[in-house]
Length: 435
Image 1 (cartoon, rainbow, N blue to C red):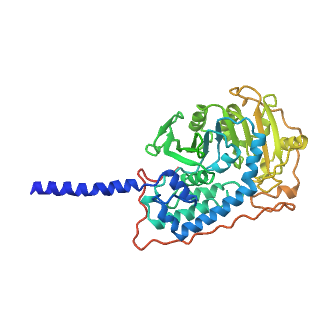
Image 2: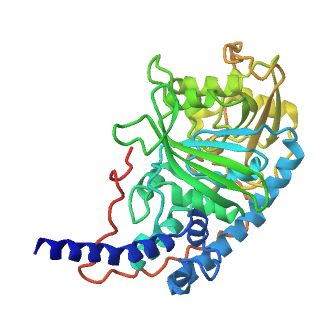
Image 3: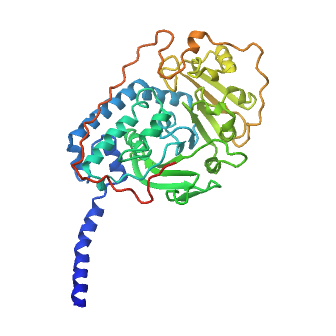
């Protein structure tokens, strides 16, 4: 009897081997997954090819074709042209803190970077495995991605409160699906994806960093332009606020990389506050060229003997008037800045946006954060009341605005409910990635 049981067990195991091999062969690559989530065509032999015939996917593809096409026409193409004309000596590394998963604008402003370091509070999530999900959950994930991108595809930035809700729920939580969409829609090919984390000293390790908990969890994505050299994108979910005298681990990791370019946009004016002095000092000490809107490092931190400052656009009262900078207003009045033909940041309407390009004029590694600006003049500029009243991102401007093509309306996918009793997709190993 024992021999018969052993034979039966062996036969059962051998019968499972082809099934396991077949499942492995059917796993979609990261590049195929990204193209599918972005609503782009797939090869006929892709394991995801049957899903592109679903009406929900077709509507998703139509929506993204229109939304990204509209965005490229009114904003991204103009940003690329501006970057080519004004950022003529880019560095190999770009640091874009407070970005969330905004690779879209990082690529538009800094297309020649070889390493991108993005950070935000939004969770990383797990690497998507669509072939292990039921069809209804995959289609629901497409709808959630559409909803998550509703603001960045119209007004150029993510809304933190919305992202906290959108990226902590649904079949594909986290920032990785958003990064996939942006990489695919900007014409990139993804070669490798891995979860990483930083320890307390800022040293990079492989793994999701959830057990035990780590101060910065992230994802490393290796990608390229078709036929081009391979590049690396890091996204870290980390809090950059000062933690007393202890170094911020993410900034320790960033300091291990060569001096590079910096980008700050729609950063909630955190760099204006005393609680973010370490990241502000990092930008002043480790960045060679910093491109920022008025939410970035305040003007009085720049030593004029060590930085060349070039303003663009128009400086208006911030959407949060408490962060109005008299010095920056005066600087814009004196400098006669070149106009911007695109909108970006909280003041995203054309002719309301501002950008400051700060270029370090001393050695790359020379720190400049010790500079102390002289006190401001006694009679600080007071903004007109009608301008100061514009206190929220979506408030109507005080005067007529130039015509802007209307944003593409969201096309909400019809939810395909699961059959009664259908289980939710299984939780990835290690549980959800929550911050």
